[in-house]
Length: 405
Image 1 (tube, one colour):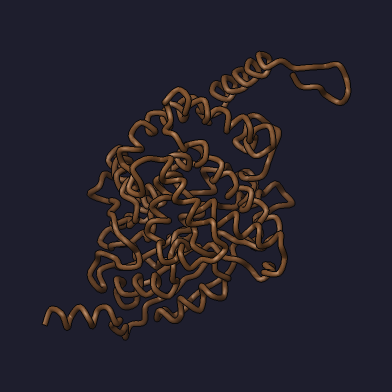
Image 2 (image 1 turned 60 degrees about the vertical axis):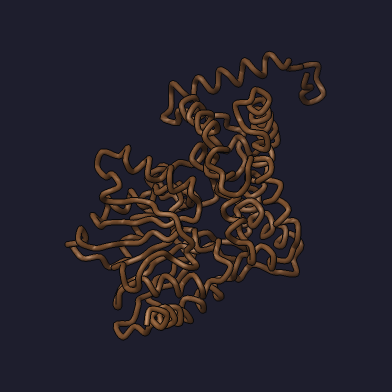
């Protein structure tokens, strides 16, 4: 029972359960959120999850190994084991992302009168507009570097008409992404598809793509110069690469304990070996050979805050409105969410270790929210680079040619 403001008013567990059930039913009937349908989809996907794990034999072992890699403040082991780190993270997190966020795993600020889905698509279309694709884009091949389950890939394919290939390290994401492509009557895997591969050593020939983009993905790389150099290698001369990067900003002070806590929470909750400063990413892009066309922190854009626009981190900020997913980030919603997942574990509807996974993700959300509020972190540092027309071959390409000889 709960006591409120020193009075004798109390609420029983049965009343809390009834109130929660009524709220869920109201959201189901009165909004497009579909919490019941999404939760049923989550439970069905749980049953497939452990069969498709690439990081471990079970979820509990996967989350324990993931937490072990993040137990040190030093990033050396995480960088050395980035494949295991990223695979572990997305084996564990993809189901929750799709359940709570949708098919596009990234942030966007919202203009006045713009809903969440519209802002996500606009953010993707804006990046696609930077690629310089011609009106005959249907003949062009575009690469999505770190495609997740392909939400942006499918939207950009429809927006530009280009042929889009998505690359992701995680096999579960490949399978789920292609399943969603096939389910889209406008696309299918003939027009866009996901393939498995490491973006530090891509399974593509030199100069095989007309454009490339990355949306909050190359932050998982252990070496920015390395991943940008691979993108440079597979692009044709004159092609454009555009990306949104996760970065620490000039406001970040490594001597500030709270800033370090924010950075660590983001790294642990989002599968990152380390987070670079904006200047490090820009320098890496230039070192890889790109001519920089544009670079800026889009979190500083004017999105109409005084007229109702919303910052990118708003979905992660706590709210007591039970009709929003932000409810889970207040202290009561946090406990309710974990209790619900724990119940699924007890009923064998979710694999053991799912509660620990959810807690890890929630800690990441707290770090992201605080990073946005303090402006010490940005998930949308825009960089646009062009491959020079006199593109030079990289070291890997020359070495491979010598092997063939």
